[in-house]
Length: 450
Image 1 (cartoon, one colour):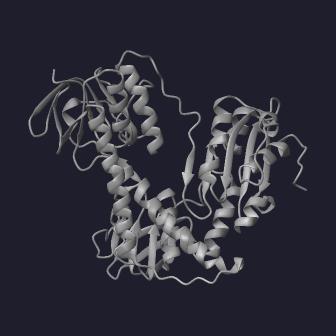
Image 2 (cartoon, one colour):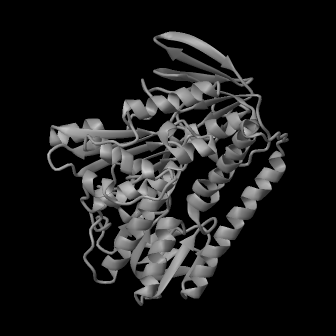
Image 3 (cartoon, helix red, strand yellow):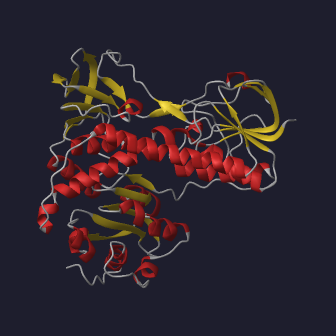
């Protein structure tokens, strides 16, 4: 065999698995059709966060007068795009350096399986084991008019060639809301069309309502329980709500209804699949013994950090270990203004499992650090099992929520209680001390909450 392991896909799941395998003494290659870093570095997490930060800077300049600072600005989309490209190039180059420093070969170009031990790219390559980490691609729904000029997906939106005066975003999920935040900050009039009856159903209503209020304050319109029927030239979106047809004329339509597993090139293997992607067990093994799969291609939780986690699991298992994936504690993040982060169970799920629960909250408006930053909108919420006060969920909406959620992640993973959090000294003034305050609220002994 040419290699112990060949990894198909150089995204977070693929390159993480490859590096760990090399560290464990395996001879490894990574096959990548487009660019190392996968969707995350090239067309997802990283480039969108460049634009999200630009939106945050614009928001800061708009509120600077409250701090006695007069600020004027202009938006140069070409320069913004170049900044995004520089960041992406540097990170992709970093992954390339890691491949080289760990002695991992990179096979460039489209890859197809010939059999369970052989692939073809520029030539044939053989390996004892394969890891499929080909990720996902933008899902294009069967809506009439998807080929109308002005209709784009998230990949095209990242090119940011211009700022449309009016944009309709189809889908109020993570991708849709992040782009709504970006385009609104850049000056677009944003309208979101969503099939579901509420925003962010994985969260408790009190948290989602804060986000909905923030969207309204930015004059972003959301039409819930609405179905897009077709897109006409113009472009114009024709949708129905409560059975009544409506039309929105705009300059651009962004279709952001999710992503689907990219399974091109693996058809001959006969892997067991479901409607979401390749089926794997808790060891990340497919229905073919020497073939493993990680990340979005498995149709599971489509997050880069989950793919990286799975990459570590599969690497150790191929090297002779016996590690099983556990998705009980996976933080989720939404990079809007305000940010949202969550981990563990929401109230509904916790009640179903434990019956009786306790919740504690603390508003950003009572956090000294938040007030000094002019970031009063937000809340920290902790959900605990009633009898033991063991933390089973946490939701945060507000400034830097995605940074401070990890205290909740660790608390749930290690079985900590509200008392453990409340008795831990937190630095003052910080945003994260709101976690201590919310924990005290669960215990019925809040200090800074009336």
